[in-house]
Length: 248
Length: 248
DNA sequence: TCAAAAGTGTTAGGCCTACACCCATGC
DNA sequence: GCATGGGTGTAGGCCTAACACTTTTGA
Image: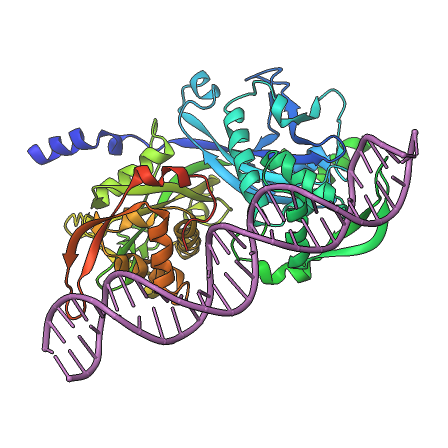
């Protein structure tokens, strides 16, 4: 039966048994330290194999009856107490051999990682240090070699963050409730790089858009003229939803 | 031991066993019929339960040793012979109870779907009708009730397509090798809606960018002045990579 | 000759850029 | 006073939206 043979030759993988998966959720949780102008990512120290004593992204395996997003929320809640945060799905990494546990037991169980991308307000985020377990904010530029393919996931998350900043108001999820326009500008430069825009133009553009309202309150930080505190007005922003590139 | 009790109350899900997954890959495959000005999506008729005799997105379960992307490629290759195509990961849908098979056997196996988004050139794509199995291009506007949560996945893919068109040169993956500027314009209007831009402005903008080269060949389609055929010059486009919003 | 489709031009307004400059404060 | 950081203004260039117009074809 040539047809049968041909089929086997063309597509031998179709006859393979289905892969069995455990599904993990790993979160790239960013925060910005406005005082020091650094972009931070939350890392946890691993206390089991594989990758014992490596830093890695906070993650967990999905339990029965639990949705992916619930699992992401669960680890997040285990690690930090944050008032408000932004969370969205990032990417799914699922190649074979991305987890050494696959080799260990030869039952063919695969470990797939659905990654999530989160932003929390640095001031509001209280890390939950449950005794021995290491947990820390790491400057993104100084992140060491991580467990699994977590460096890759982090890179991907970082790219997403840069894109998000440009066309969505995520910045205001990271800044404190009230902020100066310099704070906002600093945030953008920290994430997007030094020369993304002139300060005065950035300022003019944002103010013209009209969803930043001046509270009238002034703060003085060291030398220099005191700055106005602004607040993001979500209602006034509404018309800009779904429209391309509002920020720059 | 109050700690133990409290733990159970606060976070009962942590004590649940891990969920076991089968992972499916479902692809939203778009194509544009330039002659009829319609956006099409590839659907296949299901011949097994669940959702017997429903249309659904082409998909498959991931086999042992197979990467997600390989699986996506595999179904694609089973359904159509396309010269070139664009493929990228879309989103992962993984809530419990999205697949009725979960209820059927109570072993707690979950079905997770990693969806992919693909674009193929309509003229180059030859559907592989393997006997009885139904497979067809459906106008996106006339898609019926689909199996599983495939309508939701399709909606998500459609949104991604619109975004992609605006800031990346995917359009040229869907158009034939040589195309008229009207073809291009029609494509944009079909996907983005009627009034996304004036034809003459659209034309002027794209030509100024300089990555469309006039072949000099003219085609006459019915009445009216014959149009020039253009070709997309990937090299000339290179500098626009990573830059925001080139098209519109 | 006329309608249809392709292609060109024009003009007013807005926005982006790159600066230069003024203001309020700590030291 | 003066350095420092906050805030304002402006002139040129470029892009955009809207529309009028010309060219080339089939019927």
